[in-house]
Image 1 (cartoon, rainbow, N blue to C red):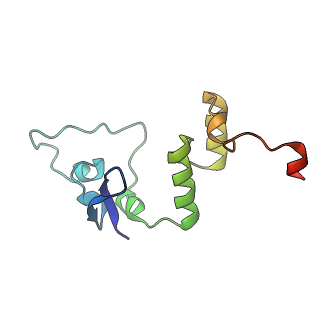
Image 2: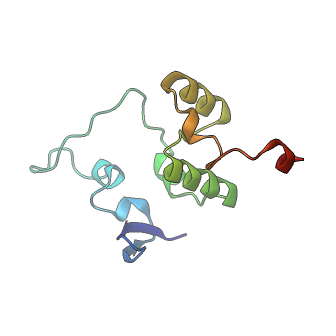
Amino acid sequence: MPRVARVAPGGFVYHVLKRAEEWRWGSLWRRGQDATDEGLPTLSSGPLPVPATWTKLVNAAQTESELKALRRSVERGSPFGTSEWESSMVRRFGLHHTVRPRGRPLKAEARK
């Protein structure tokens, strides 16, 4: 599955990649470079270790339902993860408006 490296406003694709690590401005590409290269920033190891299968996970194709959930998250600014985690983040950070349906609620008669 191709990976989009950059999308301009209006959806114009500048460059399409076959693998995420080919995108020079991503952390996956940086992790594959020599750590002693001058001029390249050092990446933090982060709070959790990177799984040995990380590259495979990043490059795996998403299902239609995963893509739909990701698009919803991006469009609405809502948390993206498991249902339990999303719910806890909504409560913790007061993001209820990002998961409610948009627009005015339907009148009682219209809901029947």
